[in-house]
Image (cartoon, rainbow, N blue to C red; front, side):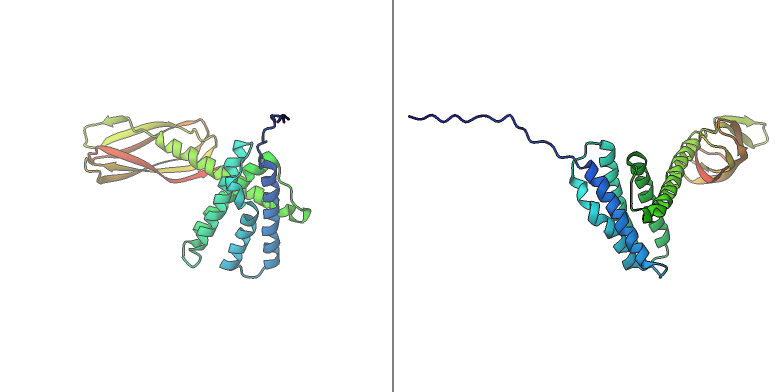
Length: 244
Protein backbone atom coordinates (compact mmCIF):
# COMPACT_ATOMS: atom_id res chain seq x y z
CA UNK A 1 0.00 0.00 0.00
CA UNK A 2 1.37 3.37 -0.91
CA UNK A 3 0.47 6.59 0.79
CA UNK A 4 0.78 9.90 -0.98
CA UNK A 5 1.18 12.97 1.18
CA UNK A 6 -0.08 16.21 -0.24
CA UNK A 7 1.43 19.33 1.25
CA UNK A 8 -0.84 22.22 2.12
CA UNK A 9 0.36 25.42 0.60
CA UNK A 10 0.34 28.54 2.73
CA UNK A 11 0.64 30.64 -0.37
CA UNK A 12 -2.03 33.31 -0.63
CA UNK A 13 -2.85 35.34 -3.68
CA UNK A 14 -1.49 38.86 -3.56
CA UNK A 15 -3.87 41.71 -4.26
CA UNK A 16 -2.91 43.64 -7.36
CA UNK A 17 -3.08 47.41 -6.95
CA UNK A 18 -3.10 49.68 -9.98
CA UNK A 19 -1.88 52.98 -8.56
CA UNK A 20 1.36 53.15 -10.57
CA UNK A 21 -0.28 51.68 -13.65
CA UNK A 22 -2.95 54.38 -13.59
CA UNK A 23 -0.42 57.20 -13.30
CA UNK A 24 1.51 55.79 -16.26
CA UNK A 25 -1.69 55.39 -18.31
CA UNK A 26 -2.80 58.90 -17.33
CA UNK A 27 0.48 60.33 -18.59
CA UNK A 28 0.20 58.32 -21.81
CA UNK A 29 -3.38 59.49 -22.29
CA UNK A 30 -2.38 63.13 -21.94
CA UNK A 31 0.42 62.68 -24.46
CA UNK A 32 -1.98 60.96 -26.87
CA UNK A 33 -4.45 63.84 -26.52
CA UNK A 34 -1.80 66.49 -27.02
CA UNK A 35 -0.40 64.65 -30.03
CA UNK A 36 -3.82 64.98 -31.67
CA UNK A 37 -4.17 68.65 -30.73
CA UNK A 38 -0.74 69.31 -32.26
CA UNK A 39 -1.78 67.54 -35.45
CA UNK A 40 -4.97 69.63 -35.58
CA UNK A 41 -2.84 72.75 -35.34
CA UNK A 42 -4.52 76.09 -35.96
CA UNK A 43 -7.31 74.71 -38.10
CA UNK A 44 -10.90 75.10 -36.96
CA UNK A 45 -11.57 72.43 -34.33
CA UNK A 46 -14.86 70.63 -34.93
CA UNK A 47 -17.04 68.32 -32.88
CA UNK A 48 -15.30 65.22 -34.19
CA UNK A 49 -11.89 66.63 -33.21
CA UNK A 50 -13.01 67.33 -29.66
CA UNK A 51 -14.38 63.80 -29.39
CA UNK A 52 -11.13 62.27 -30.61
CA UNK A 53 -9.16 64.30 -28.05
CA UNK A 54 -11.29 62.94 -25.22
CA UNK A 55 -11.27 59.37 -26.52
CA UNK A 56 -7.47 59.44 -26.70
CA UNK A 57 -7.42 59.76 -22.91
CA UNK A 58 -10.33 57.45 -22.20
CA UNK A 59 -8.71 54.70 -24.26
CA UNK A 60 -5.81 54.70 -21.81
CA UNK A 61 -7.63 55.08 -18.48
CA UNK A 62 -11.33 54.14 -18.70
CA UNK A 63 -10.70 50.56 -17.49
CA UNK A 64 -9.36 51.85 -14.17
CA UNK A 65 -12.88 52.66 -12.98
CA UNK A 66 -13.16 49.05 -11.79
CA UNK A 67 -9.54 48.50 -10.68
CA UNK A 68 -8.25 48.32 -7.12
CA UNK A 69 -6.07 51.11 -5.76
CA UNK A 70 -3.99 51.18 -2.60
CA UNK A 71 -4.57 54.91 -2.24
CA UNK A 72 -8.17 55.91 -1.58
CA UNK A 73 -7.28 59.44 -2.66
CA UNK A 74 -6.02 58.25 -6.03
CA UNK A 75 -8.93 55.88 -6.59
CA UNK A 76 -11.50 58.59 -5.89
CA UNK A 77 -9.77 61.11 -8.12
CA UNK A 78 -9.08 58.57 -10.87
CA UNK A 79 -12.79 57.79 -11.06
CA UNK A 80 -13.65 61.50 -10.84
CA UNK A 81 -11.22 62.27 -13.67
CA UNK A 82 -12.64 59.53 -15.89
CA UNK A 83 -16.14 60.86 -15.21
CA UNK A 84 -15.02 64.41 -16.00
CA UNK A 85 -13.89 63.23 -19.44
CA UNK A 86 -17.25 61.55 -19.95
CA UNK A 87 -18.93 64.82 -18.96
CA UNK A 88 -16.91 66.55 -21.66
CA UNK A 89 -18.33 64.07 -24.17
CA UNK A 90 -21.84 64.83 -22.88
CA UNK A 91 -21.18 68.54 -23.39
CA UNK A 92 -20.37 67.80 -27.04
CA UNK A 93 -23.99 66.78 -27.57
CA UNK A 94 -24.78 70.51 -27.25
CA UNK A 95 -22.10 71.43 -29.79
CA UNK A 96 -24.53 73.33 -32.01
CA UNK A 97 -26.40 74.96 -29.13
CA UNK A 98 -25.83 78.48 -27.84
CA UNK A 99 -24.82 77.21 -24.40
CA UNK A 100 -22.15 74.80 -25.66
CA UNK A 101 -19.23 76.97 -24.59
CA UNK A 102 -20.63 77.27 -21.07
CA UNK A 103 -21.14 73.51 -20.74
CA UNK A 104 -17.80 72.66 -22.31
CA UNK A 105 -15.84 75.13 -20.18
CA UNK A 106 -17.51 73.87 -17.01
CA UNK A 107 -16.57 70.27 -17.81
CA UNK A 108 -13.08 71.29 -18.97
CA UNK A 109 -12.40 73.27 -15.78
CA UNK A 110 -13.64 70.37 -13.63
CA UNK A 111 -11.31 67.99 -15.47
CA UNK A 112 -8.32 70.30 -15.02
CA UNK A 113 -9.07 70.82 -11.33
CA UNK A 114 -9.06 67.07 -10.67
CA UNK A 115 -5.91 66.56 -12.72
CA UNK A 116 -4.07 69.18 -10.67
CA UNK A 117 -5.03 67.37 -7.45
CA UNK A 118 -3.47 64.19 -8.82
CA UNK A 119 -0.43 66.03 -10.19
CA UNK A 120 0.22 67.80 -6.88
CA UNK A 121 0.64 64.44 -5.17
CA UNK A 122 2.11 62.24 -7.90
CA UNK A 123 4.06 64.77 -10.01
CA UNK A 124 3.04 63.74 -13.51
CA UNK A 125 5.79 63.39 -16.09
CA UNK A 126 5.36 63.73 -19.84
CA UNK A 127 7.64 63.97 -22.84
CA UNK A 128 9.57 67.25 -22.75
CA UNK A 129 7.82 68.48 -25.90
CA UNK A 130 4.55 68.51 -23.93
CA UNK A 131 5.90 70.22 -20.80
CA UNK A 132 4.41 73.58 -21.77
CA UNK A 133 0.98 71.95 -22.05
CA UNK A 134 1.34 70.44 -18.59
CA UNK A 135 2.38 73.82 -17.16
CA UNK A 136 -0.68 75.49 -18.71
CA UNK A 137 -2.92 72.71 -17.46
CA UNK A 138 -1.57 73.20 -13.93
CA UNK A 139 -2.22 76.93 -14.15
CA UNK A 140 -5.77 76.39 -15.39
CA UNK A 141 -6.47 73.68 -12.82
CA UNK A 142 -5.14 75.74 -9.93
CA UNK A 143 -7.31 78.67 -11.04
CA UNK A 144 -10.36 76.38 -11.19
CA UNK A 145 -9.64 75.01 -7.71
CA UNK A 146 -9.17 78.54 -6.39
CA UNK A 147 -12.52 79.61 -7.85
CA UNK A 148 -14.24 76.56 -6.38
CA UNK A 149 -12.80 77.32 -2.94
CA UNK A 150 -13.76 80.98 -3.15
CA UNK A 151 -17.27 80.22 -4.35
CA UNK A 152 -17.77 77.88 -1.40
CA UNK A 153 -16.42 80.56 0.95
CA UNK A 154 -18.79 83.18 -0.52
CA UNK A 155 -21.75 80.79 -0.18
CA UNK A 156 -20.86 80.31 3.47
CA UNK A 157 -20.52 84.07 3.93
CA UNK A 158 -23.94 84.71 2.38
CA UNK A 159 -25.53 82.14 4.71
CA UNK A 160 -24.05 83.97 7.70
CA UNK A 161 -25.94 87.20 6.92
CA UNK A 162 -28.76 87.41 9.47
CA UNK A 163 -30.81 90.58 9.83
CA UNK A 164 -31.60 90.08 13.51
CA UNK A 165 -31.45 93.73 14.61
CA UNK A 166 -34.17 96.24 13.79
CA UNK A 167 -34.92 99.86 14.60
CA UNK A 168 -38.45 101.33 14.45
CA UNK A 169 -38.61 105.14 14.61
CA UNK A 170 -42.39 105.20 14.30
CA UNK A 171 -42.40 106.56 10.74
CA UNK A 172 -43.67 103.31 9.27
CA UNK A 173 -40.22 102.41 7.97
CA UNK A 174 -38.19 99.86 9.90
CA UNK A 175 -34.42 99.54 9.58
CA UNK A 176 -32.92 96.06 9.69
CA UNK A 177 -29.21 95.43 10.19
CA UNK A 178 -26.74 92.55 10.24
CA UNK A 179 -23.15 92.52 11.43
CA UNK A 180 -21.11 90.20 9.22
CA UNK A 181 -17.47 89.09 9.26
CA UNK A 182 -15.53 88.46 6.06
CA UNK A 183 -14.64 84.79 6.58
CA UNK A 184 -13.57 84.08 2.98
CA UNK A 185 -9.88 84.28 3.80
CA UNK A 186 -9.34 86.99 1.17
CA UNK A 187 -9.87 90.73 0.79
CA UNK A 188 -13.04 91.66 -1.09
CA UNK A 189 -12.91 94.71 -3.33
CA UNK A 190 -16.66 94.94 -4.01
CA UNK A 191 -19.54 92.99 -2.51
CA UNK A 192 -23.27 93.14 -3.18
CA UNK A 193 -26.12 90.88 -2.08
CA UNK A 194 -29.84 90.79 -2.86
CA UNK A 195 -32.32 90.58 -0.01
CA UNK A 196 -35.82 89.44 -1.00
CA UNK A 197 -38.58 89.91 1.56
CA UNK A 198 -41.34 87.27 1.50
CA UNK A 199 -44.84 87.15 2.92
CA UNK A 200 -46.48 84.08 4.50
CA UNK A 201 -47.30 82.74 1.04
CA UNK A 202 -43.62 83.03 0.03
CA UNK A 203 -44.45 85.88 -2.34
CA UNK A 204 -41.77 88.55 -2.70
CA UNK A 205 -43.06 91.83 -1.28
CA UNK A 206 -39.86 93.88 -1.53
CA UNK A 207 -36.30 93.60 -2.84
CA UNK A 208 -33.35 95.31 -1.19
CA UNK A 209 -29.63 95.46 -1.93
CA UNK A 210 -26.78 95.58 0.57
CA UNK A 211 -23.20 96.28 -0.44
CA UNK A 212 -19.76 97.28 0.73
CA UNK A 213 -16.30 98.02 -0.66
CA UNK A 214 -12.73 97.22 0.42
CA UNK A 215 -13.87 94.55 2.85
CA UNK A 216 -10.71 93.05 4.32
CA UNK A 217 -10.55 89.45 5.48
CA UNK A 218 -11.71 88.94 9.09
CA UNK A 219 -13.14 92.47 9.11
CA UNK A 220 -16.72 93.02 10.27
CA UNK A 221 -19.17 95.32 8.50
CA UNK A 222 -22.78 96.24 9.16
CA UNK A 223 -25.34 95.81 6.38
CA UNK A 224 -28.58 97.80 6.60
CA UNK A 225 -31.81 98.21 4.70
CA UNK A 226 -35.12 99.93 5.43
CA UNK A 227 -38.60 98.91 4.33
CA UNK A 228 -42.21 99.77 5.02
CA UNK A 229 -43.34 96.31 3.89
CA UNK A 230 -44.35 93.52 6.22
CA UNK A 231 -42.61 90.21 5.65
CA UNK A 232 -42.52 86.75 7.22
CA UNK A 233 -39.13 85.65 5.91
CA UNK A 234 -36.30 86.72 3.65
CA UNK A 235 -33.62 85.26 1.41
CA UNK A 236 -30.11 86.56 0.81
CA UNK A 237 -28.33 85.75 -2.46
CA UNK A 238 -25.12 86.92 -4.09
CA UNK A 239 -25.37 89.81 -6.54
CA UNK A 240 -21.65 90.11 -7.28
CA UNK A 241 -18.33 89.67 -5.47
CA UNK A 242 -14.98 91.01 -6.70
CA UNK A 243 -11.84 89.94 -4.86
CA UNK A 244 -8.63 91.96 -4.71
